Length: 317
Image 1 (cartoon, rainbow, N blue to C red):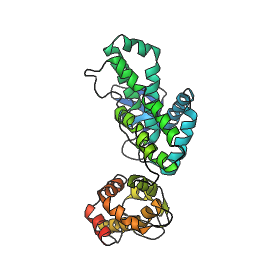
Image 2 (image 1 turned 135 degrees about the vertical axis):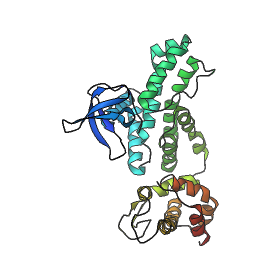
Image 3 (image 1 turned 135 degrees about the horizontal axis):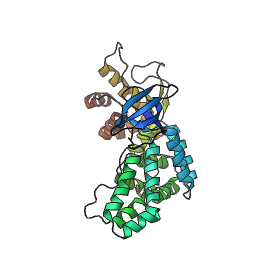
Image 4 (image 1 turned 45 degrees about the vertical axis):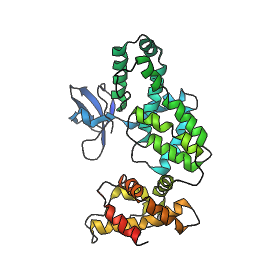
């Protein structure tokens, strides 16, 4: 969750205090806390500022409004919405999209441009810091030896490059999916996002034969009719969703036994993601990329996995 300080009275908010997310409305803002009326009740509670975020609905509506003001913005949003529904990324991709869009709009603001051209570092850095608080991401890593005019121009780059990348890759669904994953499915700042938007140049020049990471991303979005952790139909579904749940608690199989079952069950979906012909010679590629395979799966799972168990499964194949 990205925290947003300085919310006004009446703002609809989302609260993450360690339990299930809940929603309410700001009644009063304190120095480091809010008084919030719990949604659907008259009860008012005090919540630390660090647990409070804007309600996702008005935030998304504001993003859509901003996108409508940009050429091609609505079409890009539709592509991202369809991708997000299919892939269900761990991190909210619309937060990163909001980061790019608002940074771009800030770079086009005439008052900000004027301050930057005058070299008014104090004012420009203050404006940028305010937006960083609002989006919950870092926009400028360091102001050391960075001229305000250069910084503001850089903030305008990611969005148009991102749009160019989508246009360049839209004829290849696999490459486009991988590009969107690299650009949006993270919680990093603007500098890393800008770097990611430029990867379309390399993706565009790659042969259509998928690299291993692309195959894995495709496999993670595959639906399988078995529980990867313990077998059977109960708990079956999209691989990425199953991995997020982790080993089944209070089960006759230990966590390590379930992990070994999971690694074994992943192999066939990975082979199928690479080719519908189920070419089992791809096992050699899987073994060559075992470190990347482990990392990509570990990123999805909330508990620590064991490389030795993956090695054990691969050695038996």
